[in-house]
Length: 186
Image 1 (cartoon, rainbow, N blue to C red):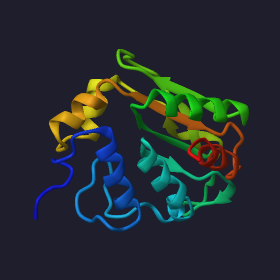
Image 2 (image 1 turned 180 degrees about the horizontal axis):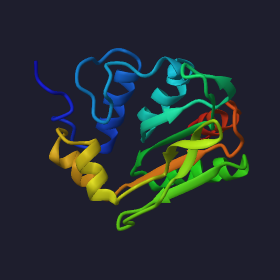
Image 3 (image 1 turned 135 degrees about the vertical axis):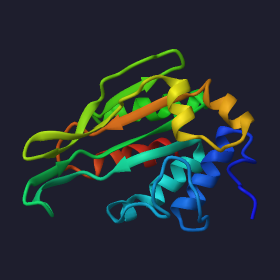
């Protein structure tokens, strides 16, 4: 079986493949993911994530917001809704940024040449940061880590793309981010 990721010639191709993976139509190896399927907590987000990917915002990581809940380890866990990924379409980027800012969301856009950002905590365990989004060591490094094994033409387009992160600043809220994104791609 051939690797469809290796044949990708653009960010749009990567978006279509990622949408197919999210929806369960594409199995096997997937860039940037350790599992064959998205985490169960993401299931209700798959329709908007797949639509985003097909529209040109290739999501590579996302999580729903959830209020404090006692976790498997006895600690209290909470999350902010967040998503990040790659986008090469400047008009789509502007629509997403405008809609996100209108909703009061945090927007971090890493354009080519940005070397480092410490990130923003999006998951806490007992009020201690556990997971960060918007953390980057620069485009080339991230592309080499996340997209190893995809087509060379798609990689060249990624190098010119924006790495976009959107975060709902309110812990536990899980509707505003996804609504803003759905409205931006209508």
